[in-house]
Length: 327
Image 1 (cartoon, rainbow, N blue to C red):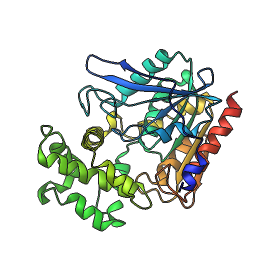
Image 2: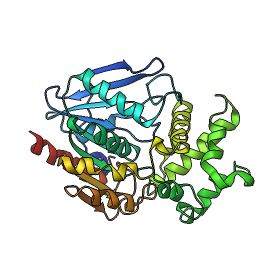
Image 3: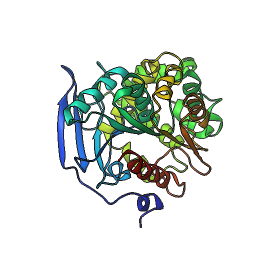
Image 4: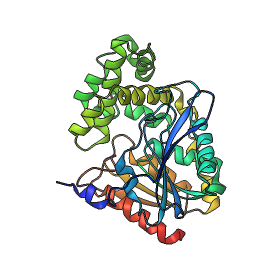
């Protein structure tokens, strides 16, 4: 039986093109194109960092109207080399997006992303606003210290999930728990194949998936049985977080004035009960971009595809609104 989230999406669609794009001497990206090649270009920015895309991610967009471009970021999904941390940073990803935009032959595109995807959308827009038609972003994350402290502390999200937080930190000696991200990074960057590394990757991912859903699903748990996904997501994400996202403190919020001055349309969708990316960040961003529209969904968490929250329907409705605005 389909959930209401599945029902809100457009029907399943296959890419009309898949390919790879070398972006450095080390990294090659996987990308795909779906829908109408002559339509409104939209790029889907996946989360993590270190996650990837799925068939459902193609389905937020009317395939008759949108030219949908999806790619796997450095080290993630089908991009190679797998879970590689070398030359893997925020503005390398922004540069990759520019290379991809030129490769697929579009002059500008709509940015669609949630969680880390919203981070990357903001970073790209603040550097390349002339190539941006608009932003549809969800579950806003800007990698400020208060956001990381909330997520990885006993007195933040750990207050709401004390039993899951206890499982999360039990692999780390007491003397290292003052900086839990740094402690995990040391273990996740051990030689690939180290038994402790895989245990830490699973613990890292299960804790995040728990906070990212109103209720952890078997599908979420199954992701952590895939060693490639498990290691890519945990290693790359921890790599970015230990390096503060390669951003100055509050950089994305402060530089959002660039987006504000451009006047491009911005819609922000945020779950009231998002424990991974609390609503305060979405609110702070909204205040910096006067033309932005902030939708706070009263019964939603972090996930864009969770049953009963209205998140999927809202995102599809906004994509439909944009297709009429941008025609």
